[in-house]
Amino acid sequence: MTSTSTPYAGREAPGPRPPLARGERMGSVVAYFVDVYRRVWRGSIIGRFLSPLMFLLSMGLGLGTLVDRSSGGVDGHTYLHFVVPAIIATQAMWVALGESTYQVRSYFKYNRMYDAMLATPLSVTDVLVGHLLTVAAHLTVATVVFVAVAALFGGFASWTVLLAVPVAVLTGLAFAVPIFGFSSRSDGDDGFNILFRLVITPLMLFSGTFFPVSQLPLVLQPVAWATPLWHGVELSRAAAYGRTDLWPCLGHLAVLLVFVGAGWVYTLRGYTKALVR
Amino acid sequence: MRSLPFGTVVRVTANGSATPAERPTRRRPAPTSGPILLARGLRKTFGEFTAVDGIDVEVQAGESFGFLGPNGAGKSSTMRMVGAVSPVSGGELRIFGLDPASDGPAIRARLGVCPQTDNLDDELTVEENLWIYGRYFGLSRAQVRERAAELLEFAQLTDRAGDKVEPLSGGMKRRLTIARSLINNPELLLLDEPTTGLDPQARHVLWDRLFRLKRSGVTLVITTHYMDEAEQLCDRLVVMDHGRIVAEGSPRDLIARYSTREVLELRFDADDQAAPAAALAGVGERLEVLPDRLLLYAHDGDAALSAASARGIRPLSALVRRSTLEDVFLHLTGRTLVD
Image 1 (cartoon, chains in turn cyan, yellow):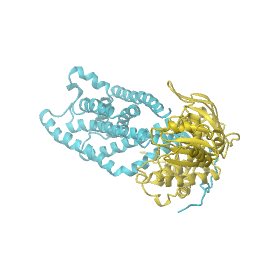
Image 2 (tube, one colour):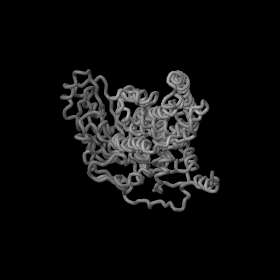
Image 3 (cartoon, chains in turn cyan, purple):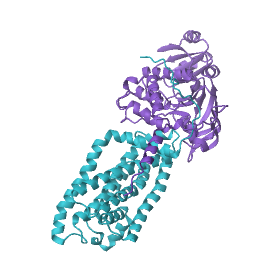
Image 4 (cartoon, one colour):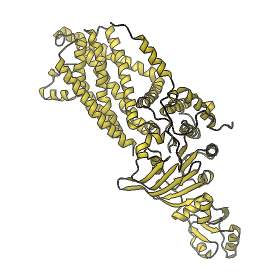
C-alpha cells in the first residue's frame, strides 16, 4: 500500500495561526481527559457507586443501629445522619487521591502526555487547570451519585444536603491540588506509600468522620483541626443538618480555600520544574 | 421558582458549535521572512553541567538540517530549546524570527515536534490520538477529522485508524507520532532521533515519508546518531560533540573535507594490529587504529590494498568502501560512535 498524497492536501495552508483564548486551551485539555474517561467509565462508575454504598450499609445502617440503640445517636442526630455527610467528604478525598497520585505520575513519566501537550500552544497553567477541572468534574459526579443513593436510604435530615455537593468538590480539591504537586516531585512508590499509610488512612479515621473529634484525646484534637478532611466533614455535616452557624462554617471554608490556594502555588512550581527543564 | 431563560440557553449552544476559525475577530499574524531558525552563541546549562556550549546555527525555509552526534552531545537539549519548551540559558535564539522566551505559544503553534520517545496515549485509538492533538492547536472538529484522515493515509495507518495504539509495532507508533506532529500543518518539523530503535525496513518506510514531507516544502530539523540517516535526509548538517559544533556542511562537503573518497578496512586477529599498522606507514592518506580493525583512508582503496599486500600484510579480511559521515565523525572526535 503506497500513498501518493502529500500531507498538505488539506484546505488550510501552513503559516502563523491565530492565538487561542485561555478558555479554549484549557477546554482542549479537558476534552482529552473526557476521551480518556470514555474508555474507563464503566469500571469507574461501578467503583464510585459501590464503595460508598458499602460504607453506607456497614457504617450507617449496621454500626448506626448499634450506636442509636445504646446511646441514642450523636449530638441529637441518628448515627446514619451523623455519618453520611462525613462519608461524602471522605469519598471526595479518596476520589481526589485516585486522580492525583499514580494517574498524575503516569502523565509525567509513562505516557508523557504532559510533554506532548506542552509541545503545542498550551502552557503549564493551561494543562494543570484543565486537568484539575477534570478532577472537579469527577468529584461532582461521584458526590451527586452518592447523595442520590444515600437519599434512597433516608440518609439526610434536610434538603440543604445539596450544599454538600460543592463542599465535597472543594474538599476533594483541597487534597487534589497539593497532591498533584507532590506527585510531580515523587519518583518511586515510597512517597505514595507514606502518603496513603501515614497521612490518608489516619485522616479518615481521626477527622471526626465516624465519631466526633471531641472523643479524641485532648492532644490529638488540634491535629484534626489542621487537616482539610475535618473541615470538609464539618462543613458537609452542617449542610446535611441544615445548620446555620455561619462563623464556624466560614472558618472551615477558609481553611479549605487555603489548602487549595497554597497547594496551587506548590503544585504549579512542581509542574514547572518537572516540565520546563 | 423563576422560569428558565430558555432563549439564553439556545444562543449559547449556537455559539458553542461555531468553529473558532470562522470567527471574524481572528486574524492570522503575518508570515515571517528571513531564517526559520537562528541561533547565536546558544547555551543550555543544568546547574554545573553545560549541555549546549555556545552554538551558532541558521536554517532557511525548505531546508533539511541535521544535528549529528553521539548521545549526550547536546542535540536533544538544543531541540527542546528550539521547540520553545526549554528556556535558553544564554545566547540568542529566534524561531520564525520570534523569541521563544516571549512568544512560546505562537512559535509552538507553527511547529511540529516528534520527540525522541513516543508520547502517544496507548489507551486511545490511532485516530483519537490525532483528534485530541488537533484540538490543542484550536482546530475545529471538522478540520481535525479531515486532517486526521489525510495524515493517516500519509502515515499508511488508515487500516488501523480505529485500533488502540498499544499493540502497534514500533515503526507504526513512530509514523503515528510523526503524523500527529503534522496535524497543525507546521512550517518547521523537529524530529528527535526519528528512527532510533526501528528495524531496517521500518526505517526505510519512515525515510520515504520524511522525504515526501521535505519535497512538499516543510523545513525539517533532525537529530540523529545514524550516519546513513543524516546522509539520506539532510541537505546540511552540523556535527556536535560535548555541546559544541565541531563541523558544518553538506554530507558530501564534510566527507570531502574530513575524509577521503574511499576507505580500506582491514581486520586482524585481535592482538597483532600494531605490526601491520607500522608496516602501513606511507600508504594512503591517513590511518585510524580501532580496537577491532584498521581504517586506511585513501583516494583509491584497491590501490591501497595492493600496496598493503606488496608489503606482505595478510589481513583476515579486507573491505574497500566509500567514505561515510561515520569516518568524518571519527576524524573529528577521535572515537567511534558507540555509546
